[in-house]
Length: 410
Image (cartoon, rainbow, N blue to C red; front, side, top):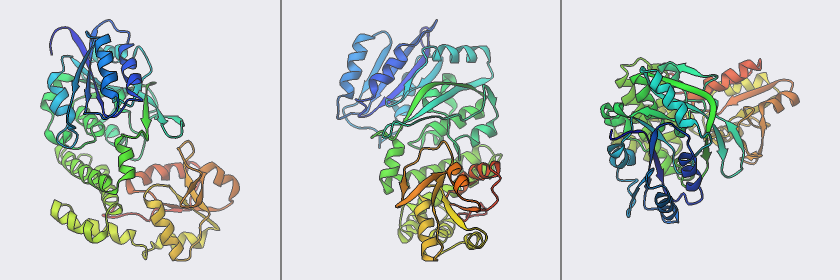
């Protein structure tokens, strides 16, 4: 840390010409009683992103520093580890990717004040608005219910089956970065691993007030790529399996139940994104658990129908598939092949949804409860998400449901 800069704000951009102005304006408009810097990394954008960044650098030369690549570095390294962490000057580090933006001019001041006051806090974060770029729909992430410190166990669970805290809400102690094991930075996805590292280093404070916007479904976003490319998603699941296995060892198995459930869920994701023969070969080559992969493939087979679905079909008049993710079309195909009808798909109230999925209507749960006297629900969700859905059903006094997609005792 150098000089009197209190916070280094890190921003990564690639083809964010439509968004980068919002990201930069949200940072330079901060009202603070300390100095901060904004370091922007452009990964050889092919649109006008770099031009916009340079214009702002010229306008705010005392605040903005830039790293402008002439060749794309994304596949070669972790951008933060290779180019950004080594050059920060602040006592604290904050983040805002190029397609997100801050909305509260007092955000940095509030976060610095809480970290300066509480030396045991390793990190703080806040609520955010989730904005769908394609539809314009907005909702609050609401990861936690109120201001305060949440335990490491709660941090581990947050984002696994629930909405996770937005990366643009993070502020961490820069001095702790030096001790971070490499496996936390091995995945292209940084937000969850980084939060777990800092939660393991100290307490994490959460502000209930939303102070940023997290855009989803933007053209260059990581999650957008996972939805558009089976190979990209498959490689993502491999990265996540390896991270959670390493993290489970790092934390000495204290959170083993939740982490193993997430690992099984990622094995389902792995199997959903690659044909079985190719997938088993890849699993063996990469040292993954091929027997667990085989169990998942068996569960996903079009000819397989879990006995719990048969039992539900005998008990209920109208059935619905709960969820519209990757398991939903698998469930639909299995039920149709077995001659078991269903009325449509269901998502929890408040979730973003399309009108149709697989050619069938998508309902909110409240709509189903108004129209059907005895509905039954087949949970077409991965094990890590099943608990959260089950809680929603129990709050609505629903007992007729089944969870057929399980493996490895989860």
